[in-house]
Amino acid sequence: MSGRRHQDYLIVGVMAAIALFFLLPFVWILLTSLKPEAEVFSRSLWPSALQFDNYARLLDKMPFWQYLRNSVLITAISVLGVVLSSSLVGYAFGCIEWRGRNFLFYFVIATMMLPMQVTMIPIFVIFKELGWLNTFKPLTVPMFLGGGAFNIFLMRQFFMTVPASLLDAARIDGCSELGIWWRVVLPLARPALATVAILTFMFTWNDFLTPLIYLSDQAKGTLALGLGQLAGQQQPEWAVLMAASVLMMLPVIVLFFLFQKYFIQGFTMSGIKE
Image (tube, rainbow, N blue to C red; front, side, top):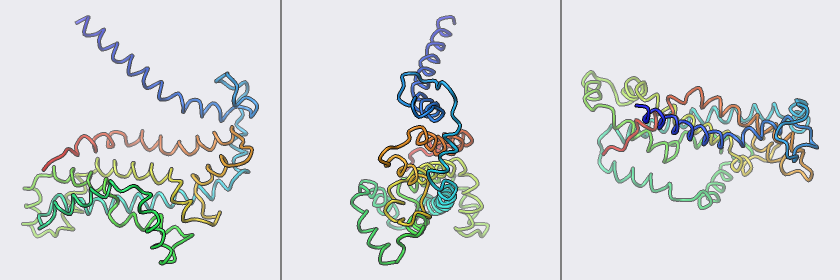
């Protein structure tokens, strides 16, 4: 028993050391955001004096509240669109029998092998012809068109774990397929939905390239674009840049800690089932 306890202590110690190693970059960014500009590249990790003014100066360097409002709006719409559309498509692939279902599903999965650079120009031309440039539509409307191959795969795998007898009972009671999706399947799929929502939030919140391509008006910029503008200055103020980075990371960290239980369940319960 003593040997087993020592082994457990060793495992916990190794895991704690690894966790601390991965936390170091965030700790460095946080402490750097509180340093005077002259001490940013000093060897001392801890600032000589805490400079909370770096966060106030950030508001003067860019329209922070405008960028925050745009980022929240785009992210909220994107999360809603991906969760609804990917769950609907995943339900069709996982819970309804129809001819050619598996072939089309594998075709959708195959699109994951296409790099973004291949489809970037054709998609840009389509949005240009639609007159959507310099609007939020290219950033939000596609999110309601399936939600992406990976999210469809995740939802489909989860839905295939739902007992077929439960779905058949709902059909016998006269419930439509949309009714089964909304009233029966979705309440059971909260872990998978939370996983898709968190992944979509992280991607959209930190997305720099897509707003850069489609948004030319500064008033429609996002926090990711603002962060890029600060980093691209001829003489960037690194302490202010780190303050902006901390504010960018906080929502993602808070969201993950609030829903980490569902996030882990979403992956563990979405096992492969054929």
